[in-house]
Amino acid sequence: MESREELMLLKQIESHDLLENLIQQITKDADLAGAIFACGKNVSVKELVHKLYVFLFELITTDFGTYLNFLYRVDIPERAIKSITEIESELIVKKVTLMVLQREWQKVWLRNKNQ
Image 1 (cartoon, rainbow, N blue to C red):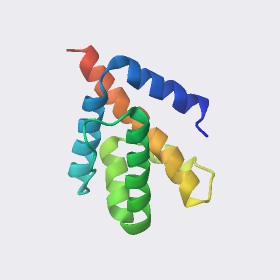
Image 2: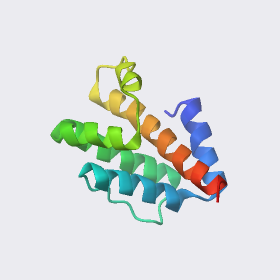
Image 3: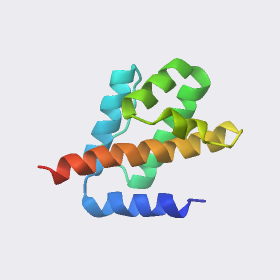
Image 4: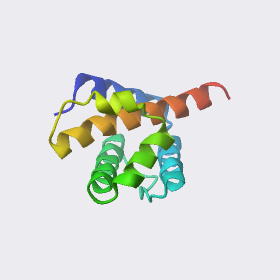
């Protein structure tokens, strides 16, 4: 079940027609971190969230160094990661997925607003 915060973010992303830019930003940061984020341009916001979740889950379980590098590239504060109280990987990744989505959306939205 999605949190209220997640639902609000998804609606905001859908309403601004910047999904392709958001996918490009996530892909770029993944590339810079040494990872491959594979996501087509014709996906829904919910599909993007799912793909990002799977991407992060795979990184956290198979390549923790690249996972940390990706979070650094995205600019997720260490204190935010340390504030996660969940202990199950699935719940941790769900929270981190929302953090990444929020930060990447912020970058895309600000860039678009200032153009």
